[in-house]
Length: 306
Image 1 (cartoon, rainbow, N blue to C red):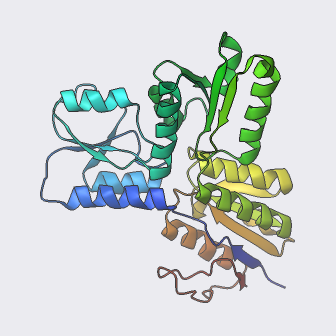
Image 2 (cartoon, rainbow, N blue to C red; image 1 turned 180 degrees about the vertical axis):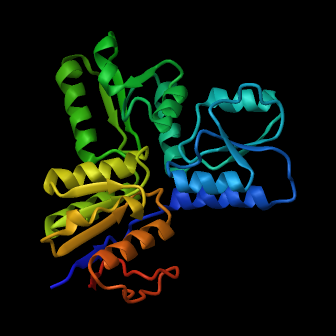
C-alpha cells in the first residue's frame, strides 16, 4: 500500500490574509508609482514577502527616516500612534488590517474608554499584540504581566485572533484566581477569529486520523506554529515546514496516512508543491482529483491515494 494524503479543507490563506495581499498587489500595480512600503512583513510568509519585494513593495521596521510615499498597514495592524506619525509625515496610508484584528482593536479601545483595565491573551512580541497594546493607551497589558497591576476592579479580556480557546480559558481562569475577590465587573471578549478556530479543529482531526502530519507555513507565523503545536500534542510525528524542499522521505517510512494542513498566511501554490513532493516520495507522480475550488490540483478534505 502507498501513501494516502488528506489535505485540510481550510488550509492556506484566510479571508484577512487574502484581502491584505490583494490590497498590496493593487497598490503596486496602480497608477501611483511612488515609494511603497509595509511596516514589517505584510504577512508571515517569506515567499510572499519576496514576491512583494519584486513588485517594488519594501518592508521596513519603522517609519524612521521615511518622508514620502505610501505605507501599507499589514494584516496584523499597527498601534494608533504609528498612524498618527505617518499622517504627520504626509504619507498615504493604505490600511490592510484584517477586519477581525480591527474588531479586537476596537474592543480594547471601547473597554479602556469605559474605565476597564484590559488584559490581552497573546504572544508578547507578535505585531498584532503590540498594536492591541497601543489601543490600550497605557491601560492594557499582557496576561503574563497581570501580577504587576494593582488596584483594578473593572477588567476586560481580549485575545490575539490566532490564539486557541484553551489559551483564552487559561487567561480567564488566571484573572479569576488572582483578582476574583476584588473584581466589580469582568468582561470577556472572545476575539479569536472563526477562521482560526476552524483550522485548529481540522488540525486536531487530522492528527487523530493520520500517521504523519505536515504543517506548512512560515516559521514566524503564529497561527501556523499554533497548528503545529496542536497537532504535535496529539501526534508526535508532526513536522512544521516552510516549503516542499524541507520534506524528509524518512518521515514517511512505514507510514500510510499523511495529513497536510497550512497556516492562514500560506499561499496555495506552496501547499500544492508540498502535496506533489509527497506524491513523488510515495512513488506516484499522478495528480489528485480536481475539486473545482480556485484551480487547485489537490483535493481539500478528501484523500489522495498514491
